[in-house]
Length: 307
Image (cartoon, rainbow, N blue to C red):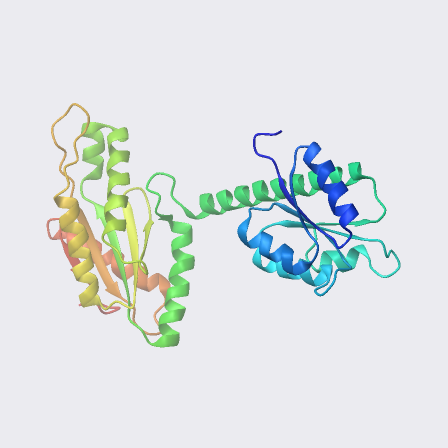
């Protein structure tokens, strides 16, 4: 018997077929269970890890087509429908109800074996395809080093948050953060140590945020943070929390003295009807104000045309 045999449920009111097909599947390496009607089948599904259900369309009480709909709604399994009434039911009927395959009686048991293998192979391919698509989606939106969102995703999300802010008349704030003298750090300790700093700062930022907030690697050593439902005053508190946490972190390059890292942060709050580019530009200008004031500080620009 295979190490992880497939668990198959056969649903039919023909007890002779149930017994013989169950015996064949067990000899073929499957773990079969049988049910004479839909109610019994649903009870078995509730308490057992079934991968494939083989069900006759004609059943007492709930029909096989109705049972297929119920199964697909509540369980992650494949269904193979079978019928001896070729003129009354079609492959299209079965697929519309969610079945993975359809077979006419009478059939050879070897054919059932092949059908089970096929639907399982298709499930594996679908699972792998979905995994690859999710990975590609992640690569398109996630920065590989810091595991924060990337700048491409930043502008998409910022537009969504601005639209939401306008719709519900909520506050929205933005932080732009830049590592102070990061070139000097890289020159002193090397880019591998610099990458460790970027990754650690990404971790610190995530720790300092709420679930509704989102953080992005904006450029080489720049980060942006979107703070929904947050005023400028509240955003400054978040910015200071991030700044002081980074300042207090012990960045220790391998075999060398402790490397001190600080950040300069710019804060802006969204102004109604403001262009997104101007919103981002205000955070950028505020961040450069922090640089001009000696770095390792937080600055705020509230208006579009600061004096």
